[in-house]
Amino acid sequence: MDSFDIRAAVAELQELEGGWTGKVYQEDDRLVMRIKKDKVHELMVHSGRWLCLTGHRESTERHPPTFAMTLRKYIGNQRLRSIKQHDFDRVVVMRFSNGYILVAELFSEGNVLLLDENGDIVLPLHEQSWSQRELRPKRSYTFPPERCDPFLLHLSDFQDMFNRSGSDVVRTLVLDVNIPGKWSEELCRQADVDKHASAASLSDDGVRRLYETMEALLDRFRERRFDPVILEGNGAADVLPVPLSIHQEGQLRRCETFNRALDLFYQRDTREPEEEKKGNVERDRLRRRIEQQQDAIERFQEQMAAARRRGDAIYASYQTCEDLIEAATGEDETYDGDVVWSYSYPEVTAVLPFQDDEVEVTLDVRKNVPRNANAYYEREKKIRDKIEGAREAMELTRRALEQEEIPVEEERETTSEETFWFEDYRWFLSSDGNLVICGRDAASNEEVVKKHLESNDRYVHADLHGAPSCVVKARGADGKKRSISDETLEEACQFALSHSSAWKQYASGRAYWVTPDQVSKTPESGEHLPTGAFVIRGKRSYMKCPVRLAVGLVSVLGERKLMVGPPRAVAAHADELLSIVPGTTDKNEAARNLAMRYGADVETLQQQLPPGDVSVQEGQ
Image 1 (cartoon, rainbow, N blue to C red):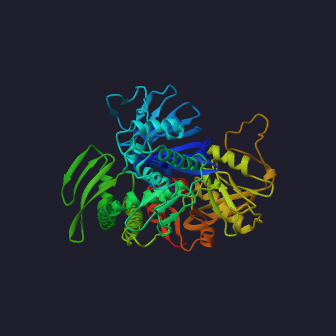
Image 2 (image 1 turned 30 degrees about the vertical axis):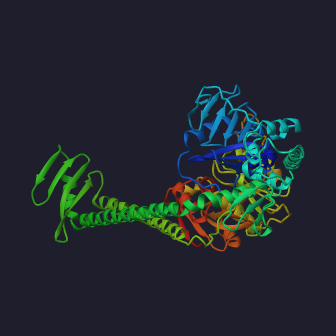
Image 3 (image 1 turned 30 degrees about the horizontal axis):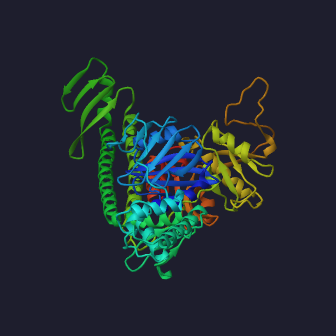
């Protein structure tokens, strides 16, 4: 980005002033800062290269680096007070409500620095030193050496620069006036001035024409009259806040904002050359994971067969095992007779004959023979569940690998970057189109009721302590009124139940719904209600529901979203779905696999999944 690019990008970004900053993500020299104003925007800063709003943040499984964590600590949940270009330099300064400052240097190797309210460096992305500047923690930050700002230049100053210059016209514009190269050539073309002519010998009329042409260009930036374009074709590629006179209409792809043009251009320009290499790395990683999962399944199968064999061996030598349990009542001992065994309370270890072979078993003297055998059968069952979970995980990995092997020119359907207000909570659309929201924690439980429970809505809660509060809106995601059917209430009850502790304990359970006037924050005399808790008065309408959810891509207000909800609701809106039931796969691992499959954000999926281990299955 040159200085004009930054001027245009920052002019548009000033619409974010007053917004609240959220998390900061980092991948190498790329930072993405979430800013919420009306909706969530993602501001990308690539040190030394570019700054723009992006819709292409890559999800990462890595723990955030130190610099990102430092930014989260100091500027997270702060208002963005201002974002400005420093003079006419390639430096952007963002100031926050707590006095902290973020400086993005977009020249040379670049840097991003967090400053405190006194202008001292808290932490730089990279430590750097020059003869006049030192960018290290606890040092006072100094801007790069000041250069000419053409926006403040008067005609007399402009004339003096040309009179003193020992270079040609275009070099004088670049080096002295601080107009980037392509813009300097554009000024020469529009002013009809020979760019190779000596600057000092240029006539007063020529200098005046050049100055007036420059002022006309600068006015477009002062007044924000941008016409963002991406230059394509004939081997040329560039992105511009306004097109140049040499460009043909057929070369130009127009965009609604310059930030959008920057995002589209730089994602293509900087990432596509790396795509094949990144794709190979990702495919290799997935193949290694499949091998590891296959090895784990084979080990589990061996352990399962061994557990079954030991249980069968105990029953095959029933009387011998009974005698061993009765005999093992004294001091620790070892006996080498017909059956080799040893005793150390409370266990007897014996080698039993079984199917022309020998099997070593451990007997608990506190249990009888059947209970000892059943202990091995229970172990076999648990290992079988592990195998099932490992197979499901391997299948998801295989699908992810298949997706990675799709040719580049084919497009995969992924989720949209557009964020809606209800995505701050757990949510789904019922089969009838009603919006249902559910708290994620005590604070959001309090919020969904106090902010979003209206007179025609319904309140839903699982019949378990600590279950989340759920609100069924008498509206759709578009805000239009919708009646609340029994089917929608049943789906909401299943949703609330599945996000409660029932997920880890039961196959089914009960949830209830009530009207808003039955929900109160006023406790009985002498009692206290913690955050997120409410008093329900009057009759409750109970429903029994299975503990089960599903996930699928759905269309919401023209955007593609990954929705986690009751299977019937997901099936009503998605072309295909995956069922989510209690299982043995860690929910974070499942979230990573699902995010990879659908192109979704891992962190968002982790928040939408139920509270416990899961099993992901095809269909309902």
